[in-house]
Length: 158
Image: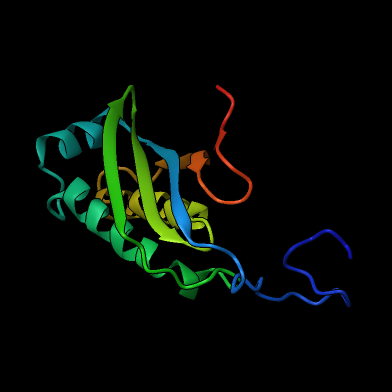
């Protein structure tokens, strides 16, 4: 055995068989940020961006993307998510997106939370690029996961 779960004995990529695993409650939280000009930040905060409600649209896009993660990431299982939430916080010269995904299932939801955050940030970029094309997306990472065989995990403080 090579120890890598997504490689077969012969070294070929494959989807992990979770058929024999017990369904357990699983939660994942991911976060990321998009840095931008004060003009873009003010327009988003005031709801005055040219394309409309930036954060409302980004929230919907994030939820839609989380539900389709198995179609986007080749070796992810398609999951029946039970909940996805997306929150936004204004920071100095940036907006932070935090997504939480959960289900009761046989595999984790880390990728769903990460895809949700990434999509939220890309949607913010798309909706505000007329104001600031130099926005920078970064710091996308898993913050926490709960449940499953490997147990709970929290990211170390930055």
